[in-house]
Length: 281
Image (cartoon, rainbow, N blue to C red):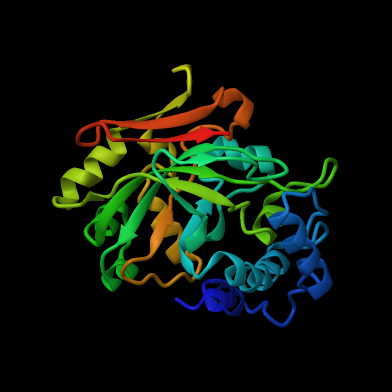
């Protein structure tokens, strides 16, 4: 995967909008990167722009952040629920990337990861082979997924108070990707059984003291978590073996204070009811 050439150029060429897109200036992107990596509230990128402007800006941002956080290792779909789309005024998900050095191991202690830090229950699919790019439904996607990981994403909305947080400004900033806690790999040995379990599971997000913060079905993400892959493919993404796909949030974005010192996610209905946890310092 080439970090700066991932889906952005393909998406803009596909819409015929590459020449018309008005990226944020190099100075604006540099300021955002400096603030974002220092956990400092920052001005919104392309607040008066459209989605083409946002994708063009994200392309610049990916290039800059990959120099700090390592290569792009996958993609993320955000705003994958109706409620999230309504909240941010969009009619479809938004897209970003995952970086190698944003990943923490299960049970990690994480401190001060943003100026507007949040956490959410998520899930990672690992691409098994390039035939996934021909998939047209969730069942076909899972035939080309080699593994899944429990995943707690730790995004940072970053924009200063009063700055607009919309589908455009979220896309421009890479959908707030900052850190994530990756649970143990679960190999996909029976694609159909795993597909069915993902659709039927309950995803339970809990605070450190056991309080349940969210309890939602797997189908809350686009009808099935694997449909996040279908959506990304529809936007020009080409996946390669080993790529990770973050499918989006099961339930709400939650501020760290509500975690009371940490969080855990359990995937009830997957084999062994696997889980992943994080401690907040």
